[in-house]
Image (cartoon, rainbow, N blue to C red):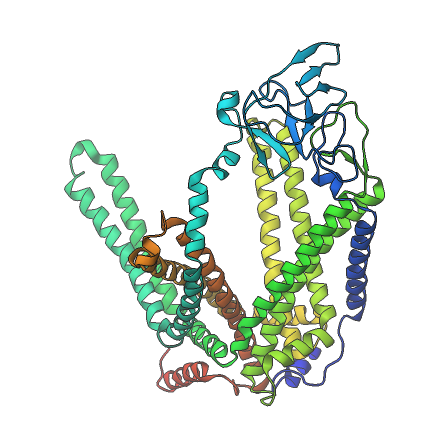
Length: 594
């Protein structure tokens, strides 16, 4: 603990300015890992051929529409008899519109003529008439419902229907309103931050009073019902049950009231921290851009990863079979299998790393803001510099641990589902219970690792320590202030959820009102529902952006406040809401208030 206290004294004036690189070995491993992923991707680009996957195969293994092949002019795969079998296929130049169409095809071993004569393995010969069909994705001919008794894919039928087309048109007509809703969501999110700054305390206490009042009123209602409607001798059991539930309501209300009274100071501290977090976002508005930039980087990395996987998948060899299915059967050696696992773990690690770096930058900027350090430089720029040049190894270490936990969770879930199915499924409730408990434990451990990682990144941002030391210090601080963290976590979760719901529903409702009451939109759309669904998605993304930064700011401010309090004897650098909280607390202590 001596080292812990010494580090705390180094933090008297805020984040450490003289820093060194931390977790250098992890930096090296992460760099090599990313380089290896890129090399594997380049190997896939060099040796893969996506055409093997993208172009369908007929019954004899000819790829329909593939350039520089005998079937290059026959781009569509046609099922000769889809009503009974999908084995017999051939490549055709165009999809037949009715049974009288003359179809140009490329005969193969099993479909020997363009009159659609099919030869079976036992030597049987059958002739099939063309049927009405439509092209799907420019690759295959899909039978229309009436042609084969309605046996077709409902989704494709829906896609080609006028209704779906009209829905897409409705969204296109309202594209300008989507941008307007985006702007409104940003404005309402800012207004919500202002509300949190000035009124969250009142709203929170009113919510607590309402919850307790509802329990009491429900208990009184049950008492009244038991006496008024079930007071007779024939309703004794119902009367007793209602009175027991009523008593439980009174007990819950009483315990809740006692808990709130005992936790009053900690709840007020949580409110002050939330108000401070809204101040941070107002002062350092650039923090809202960090998740946006990381999201754009995510799109680029995932796009590269998906394309690389397609090329890597097509690097295998096509298995030679007597009959080919419409899709390629590709065989892999052990090296390619290992490369797939490597790429899968890699994308998990990189995704966790991007989230971790986002948390670190916001946490570091919030620490700088809290202690008023580096006033001449943007906190976000300083935090980004610290993250990239000094602590990329610590961020990589924490994100690697989390990615391993996520991988283990998925593997255990797959294994448990396989065991569950093989052991009889619903006929074995004990096994079902064990699998559910195992998945629950792993999910709980994942949430714990996420929370501990977040606290460790905040500590790294403050002290410049390596990841393990920072995690230990942060965990010690959490244990010493468990009640404060618990209250902040509970209240913060509720506030974040309410913020997302309020911003999303209010903004989407405003968008709905505008498009239904504006002539330009109402006269040119068939239904307001598709645009409103898009509004909800856009608003939720904006709300999540604001609330993710807000939540991280809350987590950072409480740790900065506790470090400030621990190293200086009292909180010297606290922002205005925390100063007001401490002032009221001191006055109550002087007045003899408990």
